[in-house]
Length: 329
Ligand SMILES: Cc1cc2nc3c(=O)[nH]c(=O)nc-3n(C[C@H](O)[C@H](O)[C@H](O)COP(=O)(O)O)c2cc1C
Image (tube, rainbow, N blue to C red; front, side, top):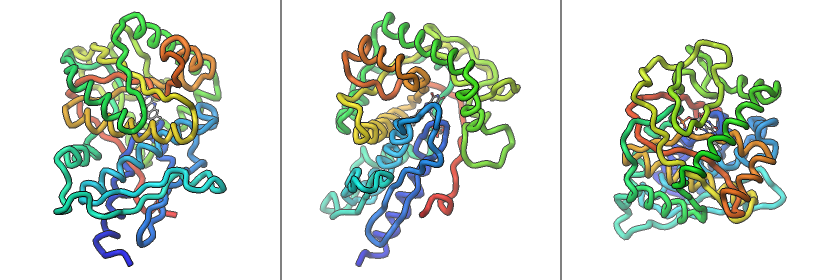
């Protein structure tokens, strides 16, 4: 039988997993905790039927929650024992996670793990230009290593031409989606109005009311949609694009989507510890033709899973999450 403290660690892991990033803050996950094991399941009622019909972004989001739980176990000096997609007959069961033996002889977490764990609640998505402060190459190399450790490539897009192509495709995708009633309604459905009491969706405080353009310019999703919503914080100094980067995988399986989410959260937590935030621009990856074009022309045949910019921001943003009681099966 598990000790009280092992149960306590599993509770803490699920509590922390709530803070993982998810597409439109849909939080498309549920958890069950038994004496020894956490089961992570996809909550397909929260899947984006238009933008994410295949469930790819849903699984990336859940992968980020899985990495968060692994990090909490490690912080407690326990080695996580994870089975991803353990049962082909139960496709919604994405992973099981148990606390194995102590990772270190003295059951103490290493500094790197404690650093990652310290960022779980602090990390925030950015939705504007960055301050004119460079992201050190050495840090980018570490982030590449963090993703590789999860079996996923993080590729910084160093050529201005390639960054320009990605920006142009993001503009095209945003333009098409803005004119498509089904896409627009889905984004509006997940926009959280100012002062709302709901605990999911993208809060109006999470993006600027007026965004300064960057060069090349990566448009944001239009969460405000005809409303005068958004933070009034001054955006004058926030015009740097930052480091454009892609997460890619060799294939496009459900396993690789979950691994992308794990790599994403590893990269984001590590970056956050060094004061670097990420802005995401996944519109073009939600359109099959544009995703295939990016795969062939920019990613040398690998599958693009996330498009992001990494940079420094001095904005303070909040976000919301549902309480644990709503997430437990
Ligand atoms: C698969 C995936 C796709 C995302 N795509 C976008 C995007 O296109 N634009 C955006 O502003 N944020 C995007 N996000 C970030 C989410 O909106 C964000 O994680 C969520 O609102 C929770 O806020 P937080 O990250 O600040 O905690 C994406 C996140 C994930 C996991």
